[in-house]
Image (tube, rainbow over all chains, first blue to last red; front, top):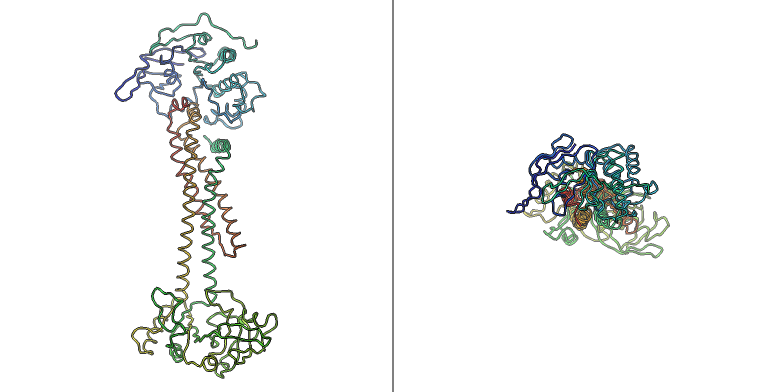
Length: 236
Length: 403
């Protein structure tokens, strides 16, 4: 599914070179729920951008579904994002004056999915993300934070991507709604079989995943299965 | 991204801030409508002048005594003052090939009194039968001056429509007597109204036989004008040259002591004045259109900045550069398109109101509408392109982080 070989990323600002990632290698199999954990400045955001095809690595190879993504043009990267990747952001990034349904259908617009199929796809994504049906026609800025994030999760999955990348998805939420969002990811992973990569700096949040990759100063320092996984029971 | 989706997105984002969208559009509406209104007023005036001048007769050449001084125009032609045109000149000119009709004329202003006591002061013109032909006059009631009237120095008069109404109100003037300069004339006809044309029109005029005018009323042997109508438009210059050379020999002068003015000269002068005026008005209106376009650009740049995160998100979920460019370009073109249509409607309304209430003829031409439309669409593309490119060029990572 995902295969990273010696990924490096160097930012050059004038004569100053900043090495953000030094030789990162790991694999993620289909259906895994992986947390990438590290303090701020560790390079985890840069890694997420590369995994999300928003940015290209300076060196190394990144294979997504067997395809080398590391040396594509901007428009080719956009194509990869459109078909294979779903994003969930810390600050939700919903179109505030649009309805919930419209927000979820947005990726389908760019993917060229026919009109009559969009609503059904959005509806099933919203149901899977646990969004109550009576809110589907609300404007997204009328929702609570937890609901907004669930709309964002539905949006990230509506196109059935290969991986869902969640960047600090609970960062703007209180612990209780954060728990519900993490539970939603667990449910989608366990029941829907979605591959999820969760980026966080909080060990507590990372512990909801099956596997934790710990990153520090641009290097992987730990990469092992999470033996004491925290399972959220959403029905409670 | 499909066209229908593009329009959906555009509609959604333009309706988010309706007041701002409306105000920006207003700039275009005002610009386009003023261009349309100004051009239509100008073109209307031009068409009106053209019709009324052509109504005076077609393919006309006027010979006036004296010289039209350069830069002083046709108004101060010394007409009436110089006495260089004689009746014999007319007989000489009659031989020129290509002439349709030639009308010797002599005019003066006189006080005219009707039997009921009404009186008016107007131009009395002495003319022959050819006067009616040359000037396209139509007799509404009665008859025109005949050759016999002219030969016999008879005291008969034909009244212009305005003069007839002034003197006789609603009663029939034909057969009645009027006194011109204390000489009694019998009214034999009334002319159909033609509408004003420049400074003097055939409506406010009395026509008497030329011989009567010269021998009884004025006591002169010279003419104030010789008007010639040419059979074929292409022969006008030919005829003019022949007339000038014949008259130079006849008058035994090296430089003309007369002037030849063609209808085309008058029309050309007036048209060029109006065209200049129209251009002047339209360019002022055009400036407001330009300001409207800058308003669009300003709004689009603000929008791009405000929606940086949205652009970042759209790119993150797979929008390509051209999708973003198309979206923002469609927004600005939509603004100018809707503004342009509203502006054309408003301009047309203004033109209609102006002709209705101010009595100025207007004509909204297809070309003016197409021009305005083209200009507004171009403004949308030109002023929308830079903001759209800026949006499309944003780095998605930075755009998503933008606060």
